[in-house]
Every structure is written in C-alpha cells, then in structure tokens.
Length: 265
Image 1 (cartoon, rainbow, N blue to C red):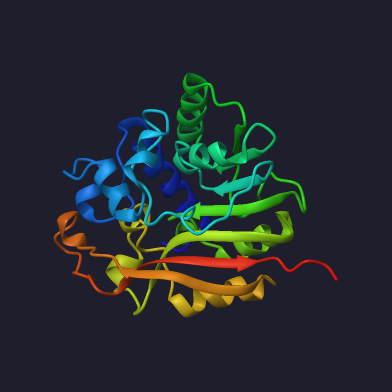
Image 2 (image 1 turned 30 degrees about the horizontal axis):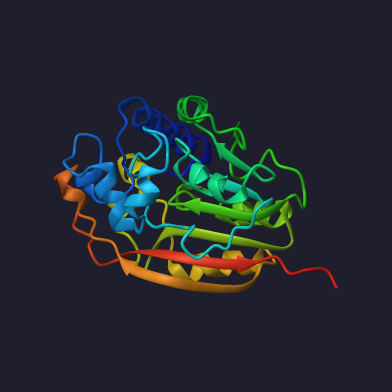
C-alpha cells in the first residue's frame, strides 16, 4: 500500500470506526476494537495519571496514545497549543486546563467522525478555549508563526509524508516555539507483510520509520535542539489480528521527542 491517497483513505476509515465504537486501535493488539484492554489501562501504561484521565469529558479518552506528550511540555497561561491528530480531544482538554481562558487549544484531525465526537465532548463539558478543525497534518489549517506549542500522540507515524508534517510544524510555530510528540518508531525494518498492511497502518505500525530517519526529518525541517526524552519498547504481536503476520515484538519503540523553532536573531 504505497499510494498516499489510499493510505489516508484507509487510515480515515479505520479511525472513523474507532470514533463510532469508542475504542482504540493504536497500541498492542489487545487494545484494538474488540480487545480486552480498556482505554484507561492503555492510557495509564502510556504515562497518564488517574487524575488526568478523570479530568477530561467522558468519551474523550479512546486509548489511542503511545505516550503522554504533555508530560515534558511546559504550558503557560495564554499559550496557543496545537494538537496534530487530535482525535476525540483527550490531549486538547488536558492542555486547555493549563492555557486558561486567555489561551487557545486547536485540534486538527482529518476524520469527520472524530471531529464530531471531539466537538460534542467540548460542548457537554462546557470547554470554550478549544476548537477542532478539519484538516490534514501535512497541510495544517493554521496561520504562520501562531502557535507556542505543538503536541501529537501516535499520529505522525501514520502520515505518508512525514517530512511535510514537520515542515508544516515549523511554519506554524512561533519563533522559540516547541514541538513535543509521542510517536512510534523502529529500531529494525518491518517485514514486508506488515509494512504493506492496511490493518497495520491503522494500528500505528506500518507507517512507522526508523528512529534515526524520523529524527533526521525533524532536523531537515529546520527545527533545532532535537532530543529523545524517553524511549520504551512496545510489545506488538500482530498475529492476534492476522495469523499470517509475523511477530515483530522488540522492533517497535515509543518515543517522546522534543524540538524547538529557533528564535529570530
């Protein structure tokens, strides 16, 4: 599966299903729709506290994350925060608590069903400093030099054009702005049967690239001070979803990456 349009179509279809069923498919096979692991259990393993999970509207946490990008991000009152691939709004609602009434959190997602769910969550919780916009992370509906912090959680790996995602991140960040992402990377190449799988794409596996290549794309987008703050192995076993898939446990890592848009001098 190499056509970018087909990749986006299938990813959008997969996450529409997640939005409708209220279950996560980014993570080990047990957390996918129809599995036994709850969103709370998945998010707890990803680094979210019980207090954080209880602070968001019901239905915002779908267990889609592979880490907590907010754990190392200093958010200030009045900041503008952008979430790439915001889903049902979990990280957006957590960030909204920190930016306050004078700040703004923008969630961008390409799946209309996810946007509808996120907007419903905001409405029922009375959250007014968050807005959700339809768009692709390769072409953000966000103005140049307008964002203090970009976060993303297990989403950039899904993009067929990651270089463009990081160029867009650079474009919309203010000078001195921060990029903080949790994502899936590889320490060895995926088998062809996994790399070309639609189902593996929506499980945040097939779109992942080698860690060094991922970090290099960030640097090539002119972001600086690129650092891996955390790195853990992710126990994937895709044989649970397809008996033909080989086990690839040990080759996949969840990383938290920080980068900065250097201030003008």
